[in-house]
Amino acid sequence: MPGNACFKTHNRKGNNCHGLFTFKIPVGKAWENIHLTKSQESCTFKVDYFKFGQSDYYMVVYNNRNESWHCTCPYFQFHNCAIEKKCCKHSQSCIDKKNNIEKQKIMKSRGGIQYITFMNEHITEIDIKKYGNSDTEDTNTLRIYKHSNNGI
Image (cartoon, rainbow, N blue to C red; front, side, top):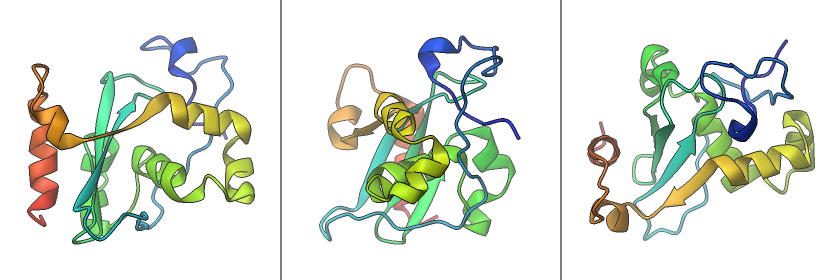
């Protein structure tokens, strides 16, 4: 089975990782909590596209208060991930980056050291409070942040 992600630097939009080394990031797995301090209400990630490039990036938010995930990708929206509490590949890779990077068996199954490099290049944890006050404010980012923090 082909993978569902590859390095963006080698995969122009529309190429769909054709002819490239790919990673197999599971989809449909149950949500996992990530390790945040009790004072952190949420954690927000800017995730560059992995394969298709329908968008330059997706926003992934973990809400610590109600232990929920939200992603702006089409898979999350159209496969009822919020209702069924399951991961898209973007939320799963954020879980991997926060929780599983030291778990060799998991990292090996996803592509080993190359997967770690992939996560570091494609996933950026952002401070939404600083991001929202910048001149380049992204209204979709703020919308999903506010949506997820209202416990919806």
